[in-house]
Length: 503
Image (cartoon, rainbow, N blue to C red; front, side):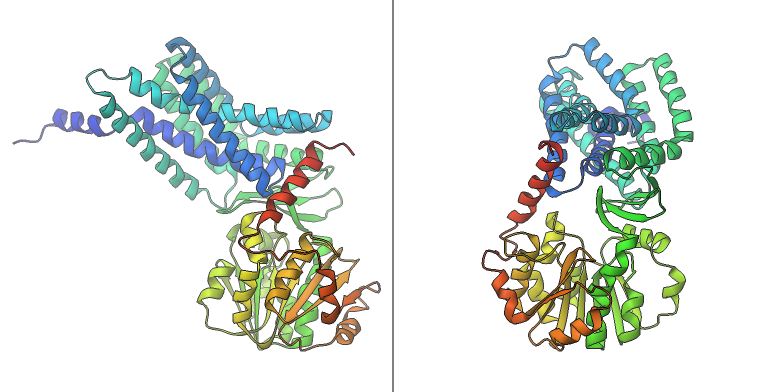
């Protein structure tokens, strides 16, 4: 049998449909853009991540529900309006968030803002599939139409995520033009209106040409007006595989590292943080092998290296590393450190797979505000670290606040350490505005040695010796993989304080 182009085309048409394919691409890209940007705007605790993600899927559900209730004219009008409105991203929702903040309208308005944009982002795309199945080609059975359209949409969704993958560690301005092009193609196929298609692309072109400037301006406005950093300027903003990574400069020239809209560190506090989490334990232990988990800015390496044999840094997020090397640590200062190695990996995976035993492990990671971060503060993780330490090896942990006799983050992290290690010493530094824990089965330094080394840095330093530490833990429940309630409780508390409780 000879090959027939028409026969081939008809077979392809039975297994692939372009409209649901483009819908799938649009859904996957819009989901990524919405979740990353809205989490950053509303501050990225686990509660906010859950809320934003849920709102997107609520928008999908509403789209499915309304799909067959709309007549053809209403559906096309809503789709055209939605497509044109998508050209206002990211500046429209950033301006909206800033306006709500400036008017001090409170949490209810932020929730309405989130739900409305969720509908815009996802509902109109969700309305396609039921309509294509119910109102599509009558020559096919409903089952055949479901198979064709759902498969095509799923293929488009995967294709969209491929474009999302290509955008990793790049600004949103890389992904938006791709998204708008596919959306414009879909708009033309559905409406077949050359005037509307032309207007869409005419509006799109100047936006693409000015998108980088608009992105930086509106992102800076969010930090200036909503996040409270007056006259702030966003210098660096990328979507890494794990979070939105941004470097913000204050009006006084101070640099801040933000992860999903939460401040991770600032340049003025970095010296105190590195001193207590790295300089103190490394000078007192003189380790042959040092492991630094986290510290994506790589700012502690120069503190650790002179007193260590081999140094290994393990950081999961390459986007944070890139920000650190550009704004917080001079790459030239690291270039000649031949006993230092940087590994991009998950800390848990590295500890499970390495055969090296370390004399010092430094845990320079964010506060446990998300499940991913909290997992690195659990008893299970500290047991992993314990198994990779030498007999008198030390683990150094920053506690995200001062240790007190309660069940809050610092005491729960110390309780987790105390479950695994025989000795836990805590150093409370008012200057650094937090406590630090040094844990070991046999601490190779004393309280007096820590004080002698540290007192010049912070005269108000308080040191809690291992025999005193447990008296602080009478109310503290160790943080474990089965007791992650702290993440949601703390996130909900911060969310409610921020948006619903008046000062």
